[in-house]
Length: 466
Image (cartoon, rainbow, N blue to C red):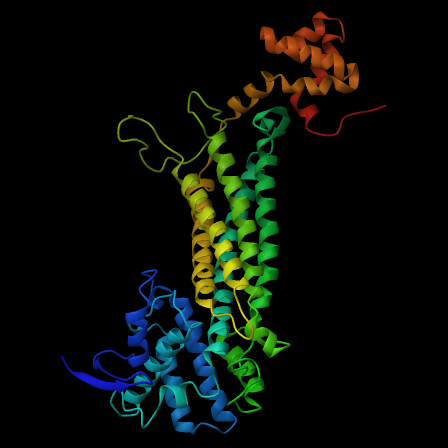
């Protein structure tokens, strides 16, 4: 195996010459074996980081602190990474100490060695192009790492919003399809008053629509970056014009308008924007889990449950009970939502842990936030395509539950008062008689009045008159 010698502040190491990362990445491989998830499993993050590095090289060229040929070769190396090449070279664990320095150096070393080969040199010949002096010129982990997280999160939030719109559209289709199907409303799992299956699905669609608005608003905070802040926000070792140039370069490269943070010192130490985004994701997860659970309950049966809807049958449900089919899609979506909710706690605690001019726990934030975005996007797509799209209703079962319910006695309140209505309900529960029959027997109302009051459609809207 051919090797090359590389050194850092700690000492010298023999590096396998087939790899494009260098000594500092190798240190991270030895030190951080925590999550088992490496950078290469988050290609959107690698792409975002390479976009940041390309913008930095071109900006340093424009402000006159980096030779044009070096900048251009670095940009070409970044383009290869942006296009998905060399993905296997991003090997450090997502959870790491050092506020993301290992990730930044993994990018710096790989980009440099790709560029060196493009220049006609060998990997590790850093006298011609150096990971720190050139690829990291005018930068620090403390501005490139959080900025790359924001660029990556913006991209993944856009994908998530596409998935949410897909689910919203499918729910709205079902709301229209089921608008005339009467069903029993329930509160605290007890009979309440009638509604329609269409109303139920329209409410679900409203949840998702509201979360789309919240997540879209939260995504805006990801456009404000601290590139040019370097170590703590003062911009040490950075050209004065760099921060203005890189804002424009990055926007051109990514196709999204990024802006300078209002206060670089505050932006370098504060990670509350990620808490804000995670909070919006958590809210969406809570609502999606509620939808999944309601569908699971409405689907229960098929003979001994509610049986109001039919979820698509996806797979056999038991290794011992023939014919059993479980609501696996609703269940997996619920589990995914709990993961997102748990990640929010991780993000909150990591953000709170920041001290003075930097938050060293940003890798924990990135790992949890990326996972939440991936999981929630997949959960939204799965719910839309595998549960809602081909879901059907059981109108007869829905109507039967309304007509047999004691809860419809509520409709008598405006006509005979609460006390008499409660008395009817008590007798109905005791004897099993329909509430209308009891009301007629007691002479409270005529049959015509009772039939009109208990007509399901008449119980769906405000109806009290003087």
